Structures are given as C-alpha cells and as structure tokens.
Image (cartoon, rainbow, N blue to C red; front, side, top):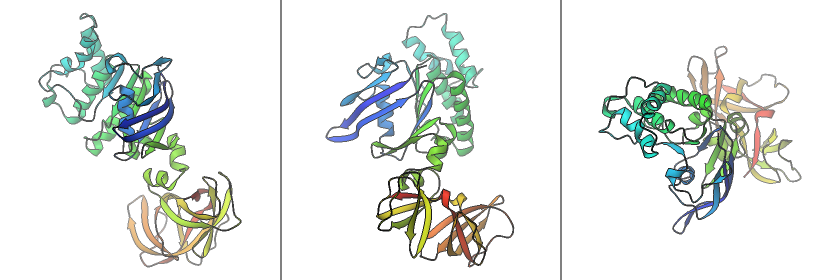
Length: 360
C-alpha cells in the first residue's frame, strides 16, 4: 500500500492559479474522495496526482518516493475515467491486457492476470465481447478491471459513475467500495455527488474554489459542517441569518446564544464567534414540529411558524414552514400521527445541540 503526501502544491493555467499552496496527506489503503462543484479544482488535483499536469511548485510523494517530475506511465497508477476510455474495436480481454503489455509483463502471465481482474469485477466470461455489446455498467467494470490488472500502488477515479443511471450507480459504487476495501489500494475518487462521497469514503475533502473547505470522515463532515457552504453542499440544510450581540463571544464547540430576528437561539459554535453577523445551520431531519401551544422541552429552541406545504412520503413527512421572522425552512419528520396540514400554526423545535452557529 502507498500513502500520498502533497506539500505546498500550486497549480496554474497561464496566469490563473487554480490551487495555491495545498497540503494534503492521504493514508495507506484509504478511500479518499475529492468532492465539490464543477470548476472547484478537484479534477485538476487528481490529474496532477496522475502526472497529466505539472505543478508550478510543491511536491507529490507516493510513500517516500517523490513523483512530482516522474511521467504518468512510471507512477504505477491505475486510472478510471468518466467515459470508460475503452478501445471500441478491441475485445474486453485486449482492453484489459493493454497496461500489461505496455509494462512488458511476460506473455505467459497475461491470460491469468486478465481472468483474475475480470473475475474480481464480476465480468468473468465476457472477455471475447466488444465494448459495444456491453451495458454502461459492464463497460465501467471493464475499465476498473483494466486499472486493477496492473496491480497499481494508487487507484485514481475521475467521476466514474456519472454516466450511469441511478440504480446502476448505486450497484457499481457498492462494488467499487467493497473491492477497494478487499484489495486495500489507496484510492482517490473525484465526484460532485455528495451521496456517493458519503457512501463510499473513509475521508472527504470538500473543495471550494481551489482550496479545501472541510476535511474529515463522512459522519463528521455531515453532522459538523464548518461553514454554511459545507452544510449546504453536503446534504440539505437550513441556513439562517443570525446576529451575535455585543459582548457575546464563543470558541468552537462552546454553547452560544445569538439573535434570530426578535428571538434568541441557543446553539453550538462551529468557529470562533464574535459580535456581528453570522449563520445558524440546522438539518431538516433534526427539526420537529409541535402545536403552537405545546410545552417546550428542555434543550430546545421553539420558534413560531406556519406550515406552507406538507407532503406525505410514507416513512417521512416533509414540510416547508414560514417562521415568524419571515424565513422559510424545510423539515423532514418521521411519520408519527396525523401531522400538520398546510396553514397550521406551529412551533418549530430546534435542538440546541444540533443548531450550529457559524461566523459569516
């Protein structure tokens, strides 16, 4: 297995600096995801790790080996692309054999290596077919087999599931995650899909305009976002404007009381909080509704509101609620009782420990 150590990496296109001074350590055998919207720098970083882009400064090491100036074909990487990149006029066997032949693996070893790789991805018996005779999911499995057959130190995957339909994406992502854990290959996976990132990753680096906004495991990055951007990008979030009153300050992880319109909200700081404008963030599934005259439980913020929309989805009800100060929020509650129809006057309960307060 191989770690990836990135030190002070700067990547430029002409006069445009895409990534500046990036430091990142990816551990041996880790499934590491670069997540973010189009144009944020995640694919640029992946292509630089692969050797397709030469950085302006900084270094990349695979373990103790500095690969910054080493060409792609000498880095011992496996690469899986979004568009499969299979030779359409060559059989599955020939496609998978390509990397072995390029590395001058003895001919006597190649058939067994191909068979092993295809069996691992569930494509045994398909070796004589052309890519055009395969489904999209099968072609992506062949592309994965081609990357694995060379026994790479590092596996790089650039949005490999984006061309598949929803059901197939779920099947293939489960197969990739299981296979990666079985083989223990250090894997860097690029996606803009937050559900893929949460489902597959050991750790996630959430990118924003060429820098890492948040780095952590799926649970941490979902439950404890460090900014309104992180909260809103990963999962649904209610992001509400608040004001920190004069004389109030709080360090990360401490309780803090802030102004929300004419009311007060008690929450937990996700950054250093000082007087001024900021945000409170709460996930829809962390909020609940109660009758407008119901008793307020301890440890809960109660904000008056009116139900604008109610939708029954079997296991959950989803609500859109206008709060008393004019803000609109979304709530997703497990079904329990008749619920609250549109136009109901209600209380919205914000648990204090799930109400995260952030500086602007």
